[in-house]
Image (cartoon, rainbow, N blue to C red; front, side, top):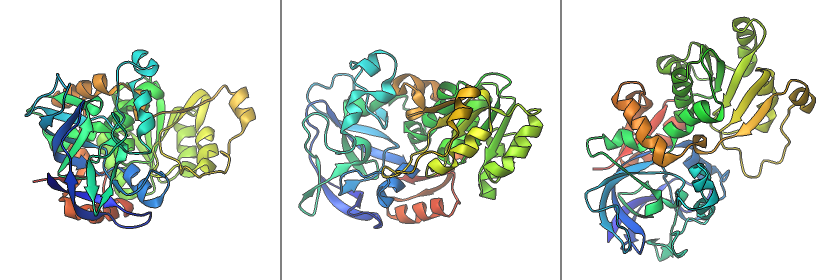
Length: 371
C-alpha cells in the first residue's frame, strides 16, 4: 500500500514528507493506522547526528493507533484494536524482561539499524530505497508496520492523541522519579530541564510524595508550566538553584536530582552533584551525544566521601506493559495530567514547524495528529 511519512535522508536536513510504499506485515508483525505521534527530542537527535542511527529513516517513536492487519502467528491482536507503541520492544523472554526490566529487552539491540526484528529487512520503501524506522516504529507516518513486541493494547475509549505520549515521554519522566530516583515522601527533588520528560518527572516526584520540587529551566514559559505539574519552586539554572536548595533544605541539599535536559552535557554533572545531598542520587535520563568524549566534570572524592550515587535511566527504568496501563489509570482518575502536556498539535506536514517550536522553547510537547 501507499502512505505518507516524514523521512530524514541526511543529518542536519529537514524532515521530508514522502509518499512511501508499505509492504504487508510479515510473521509476528502488525499494520497500524496511526492516530497521533508525540514529537520527542530524541528524534531531533537523529537530525543533529547525536544519535547516529542508519539513514534514511522514518522518524517517530511515541505513537498510538488502530490495528488494520495482523501477520502470521499474531494471536493476541486483531483489526480494530487500539495500541500504544513502547519505544523499546519487549519480548518477555530474555534475561532483562524475565527479571522485570523490560526497558532493557535484548530486542532493543536492533534499534540502531531500524529494520524489522523478525528478519532484518524493511517493510518501508521510498525512491527505490529501503527505509529504517526510529526505534523500530516510524510513527511519523499515517501507517506503519511494526513487530508485536512493540505493541501494548489499550482500551478503545482512551484518546489516542494523549495516549501516544505514554509510549515514551510520560513513562520515561515518571519512572525516572519513581523508579530510578526512588523519590520518597518528604524528599527534596531537583528536575533539570522541563520538556516532555522533565514535566513528567515532576509529576512522578509529586505522586511519590516529594515535599519540595525545584524545576530548573532557562525558559520562563517552561518554569511556569512546571508549577502547574507540581513543582514548588523554580530556577533558571543550576547555579541559581544552589542557594535556593541550600536554604530550603537547611543546608542538606537535594535528596534526588533528575537530569532531563534536551541534550545532555557531561560538563554540567559537577553542578548536579553539588546540588545533591549526602547519600543523594543523580539520575541521568537525558540523551548525551554519542560522540561526546569529554569526561564528566565531577569530583570522584565527593562521590566516595559523601556516598552520592550517579545512575542512568532508560524508559524510566520501567516495564512498559505494566506501567503504561497503570499510568492510563492515573490519568483517568485525574492524578496524572496528560492534557496539559500537549502544547500544540500539527499535521504531518507541519513537522518541521513543530520541531522549530520545540527548539524555540514554545512547547512542552508537540503532537502530530493524523486525519
